[in-house]
Image (cartoon, rainbow, N blue to C red):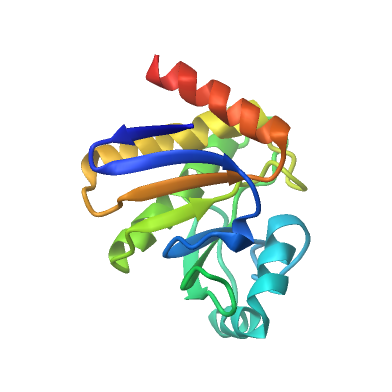
Length: 177
């Protein structure tokens, strides 16, 4: 599924984010930038040791913020590491932190002059964020950002499984009416 907002194309695909050829892929990282499971582990395995080496130099990343490293062996030149919130019950500022994770990643891409980036579904795996709520935050944040920023030309959401892809498609359809 694909829509155009301002000068940007927002695309939803089911697939493997480690195979994306966008300028950057976004990693759903942990605060220590130590690699891990899920998307984080997959990006580190596919990208090779150069990514972890740069992460160690950076040292960490607070929840809701983003940092950038090389893409190592990935097709993407860069990896933007962002830390989404661990979902507790929805009343601990999780939505604001999730929005901040997406927004920080988009801003960092703009600062670095990047034209395209690919996002996973941040915080919906081990961090337990409800998928439908997370999709709404992710899509609203991306749409709002590209409305006001001409520099980003492509925002891809690369969803690992069919369920995630379908939920993101449903949410996007609702957002665009």
